[in-house]
Image 1 (tube, rainbow, N blue to C red):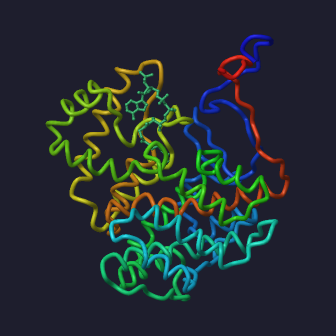
Image 2 (tube, rainbow, N blue to C red):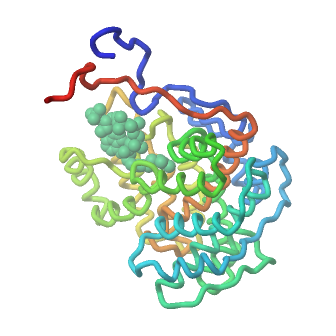
Length: 368
Ligand code: ACO
């Protein structure tokens, strides 16, 4: 209370530095710039794994490189809901709606299971692809069980089976996006399931948290910023003017990383090896060089390096996705991590309920 006993317990705005869970899933080493999933380095998983194998590793702890997972079916109720959305609905809103309706059709019981985790992770790519087709006046495409999840998603989106290079590039993106410790959306999922709510509600809440530009909305803004720069000669002036206006450079800075984000390093390689990289990739690399130099000059106290979103942008555009689908595609990948955390939380559950320091008026009488 404000007047009798001051609350001297430590308060950390944004919960920065607070340990709020134990996890054996992802280890984010912000100082050294390392990311491990159940101990395995992210770079090795990208080179030797597939998204279904990585998701299975997160759910079960077993490394089975040949593990397969196809996209899942679309219940009629979800199709009806997607068709009823306004044509200009945002893909993240459509995905959140789809998962909510899907949950209502599944009779999801507590505790959440790996089968439920698999089912929602397999369902969402079908839902997003269906939404994208419906809004452009096309019919949704049924899942092809012979395709793994990522090529299956591209097939349902475009109507064409992707070539290996394209499928592999997006699969790499899904692997790096799968898990990242107790980030805001994962924390949201854990809070929701800690009340013994169901896995679909946890995923809906996580999608809502990921929708914010400070978390998952940056890659489309990266594309916009790079287009605004226009040419490498303008990079220095644009970076300085943007920072002078107090604006942020999208794709830089991170709550945890003080080093180059290892996911950005992995995706830069993928972007550079794309068969059809976006024509602005070289410009993006030039902007990155300038941005890192100017950010170091402006913020000597806080290392602001490239984050995953910067190189997610050219990979996602290079495989043919439109920028407005970027955040929702990130959400599809993060389903693996969210649901693995949901399982971990439920296995040793304690209701997540922190305290707030009260800063309002002391006890008083209502005015007469
Ligand atoms: N550009 C310019 N300045 C920045 C940037 C940036 N990208 N990021 C941080 N800063 C500055 C802030 O202005 C602040 O300076 P100040 O103290 O002079 O005001 C200082 O660095 C510290 O910033 P915070 O906001 O305290 O850092 P926080 O840990 O809260 O933020 C975040 C992390 C949100 C990612 C931030 O770096 C940011 O907004 N980046 C741009 C958006 C982005 O790329 N988001 C994707 C993140 S990756 C992901 O979610 C998957």
